[in-house]
Length: 244
Image 1 (cartoon, rainbow, N blue to C red):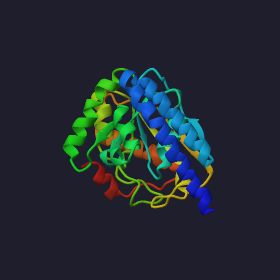
Image 2 (cartoon, one colour):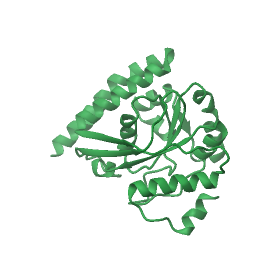
Image 3 (tube, rainbow, N blue to C red):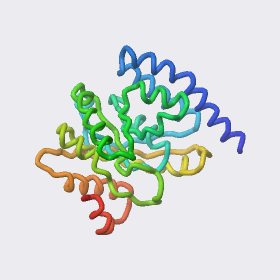
């Protein structure tokens, strides 16, 4: 079994080594083409690891307009699942800068126009998110994990950080909650044993931001994700933390 796990990791490494230079080259001329290559990288990784993605949509979405997709985060496979569930969209990820330090992968991540933030500097992180507005004006959608981390929680949502909500309010782009279920069984945190299986992705109905404030939007996204993930209502202390 160890050899099987090792083979999967080796396959992902080879796929990354082959695709990353192509993504970087394409990004220099056509960022949209670079993202198409990134989707191919995702499809190959899912196939090699025996992971399938089943997607459910609660409402129609318009691929020609930008959205701020907000997903829960429990596994490294969450990102792959969201890409697979939204094949008609041009997506740019909000990613922590530490990911750019991963050899080869980080090179492609930064070159492909994803939004790299420094979590140690909240003010700079907000400024970086606001800079994504120019991309969204061309119809590109942004994906963010508002919990900010996979660490420190099991079967619950951490407080949702404000950056994505600020971006949605300033651009007027609707927020779409995305609930990813089953990814931790594929690859749990602090483990590199990738198990075959199925990930369910529930893409919620768009939430209009016009006339709403950040607290209201945060509560609505949390309620949708909690419902789709089958989680209990959050305690008042957590709600309070999200208002800060």
